Image (cartoon, rainbow over all chains, first blue to last red; front, side, top):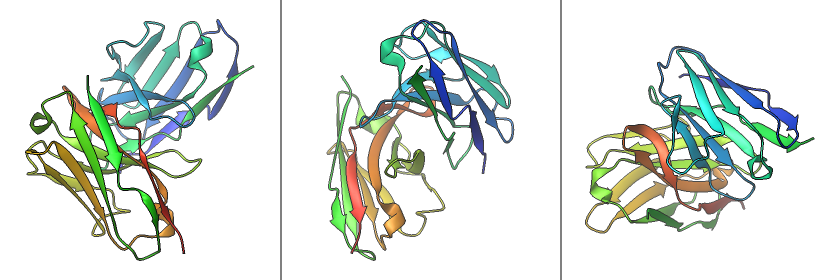
Amino acid sequence: DIQMTQSPSTLSASVGDRVTITCRASQSISSWLAWYQQKAGKAPKLLIYKASSLESGVPSRFSGSGSGTEFILTISSLQPDDFATYYCQQYNSYPLTFGGGTKVEIK
Amino acid sequence: QVQLVESGGGVVQPGGSLRLSCAASGFTFSSYGMHWVRQAPGKGLEWVAFIRYDGSNKYYADSVKDRFTISRDNSKNMLYLQMNSLRAEDTAVYYCAKVGPSGEYFQHWGQGTLVIVSS
């Protein structure tokens, strides 16, 4: 199974900050990586697929990069609506696996 | 717009069974693979099962293999998860999710249904 490791697990930031979240795969997954945002009590929401493709309707302050085993989610200027938990997920092979999540908190 | 509505959750005793349903609308259901994903209380996301658009291929997480069965009825736009031999560790919110057009990521999600396994 491919293990996905996210860092940090918690991040404290202020509105307007540039935020980066890292996701590492235990083996190469090419660009088969997605990012999701989840708010408390809600279903996750797709942000990014194929490592860097922005899902329709997602604000352009979100961007993804990377390939192989290292990936980054960047929020260019953190907004109040962005305080949430973020997950990466590989879909290179089954079983599909998620990272442990990164909670973005208000500083 | 895409809508996925899960139902069938509830409280069940260990060793019991439950069948979850997911009603799909707003897209051509018979053209897309579908997943079940779960989230235990206060924990992260765990992929559970996948079924191909025509039901010809199915994959399961090791944690549910031989206990859970994913199925679909394309004539009714319905996805199912039959859960047998339930354990306390199966307690979670269960989401159905539609794959994306370019890969088996989770493009659209339902609101989830809560399953509690407890005596």
